[in-house]
Amino acid sequence: MNESFTFILILILIIAVIVIFVKASLIIRNRGGSFLTTMHGSTYEFLGKDKREAVEHVVEVKAKKKMDEELSGEDSIF
Figure 1 (cartoon, rainbow, N blue to C red):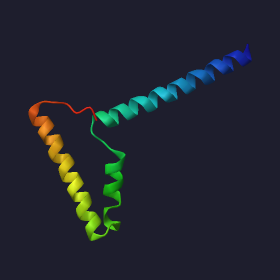
Figure 2 (cartoon, rainbow, N blue to C red):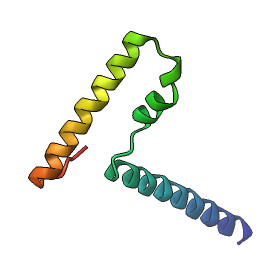
Figure 3 (cartoon, rainbow, N blue to C red):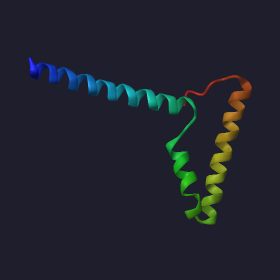
Figure 4 (cartoon, helix red, strand yellow):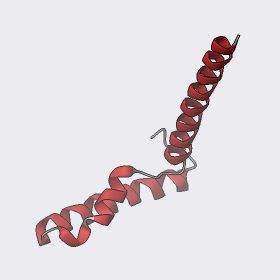
């Protein structure tokens, strides 16, 4: 009985961890957070002038696209 209880407990913990990670990733995705954007922001000071301008251009393009979607009332899938 002790072995079956341990097995069931471990199985429940694994399922709980998977559910937590899935919910967290969905929340981050729905709120527009992006790991790539965070990494660009944290490494901005280490970039050269050309790379900084490229990052700024990408951010501006994404921001304009997001604003256009919000103004038109459409939700982005990504």
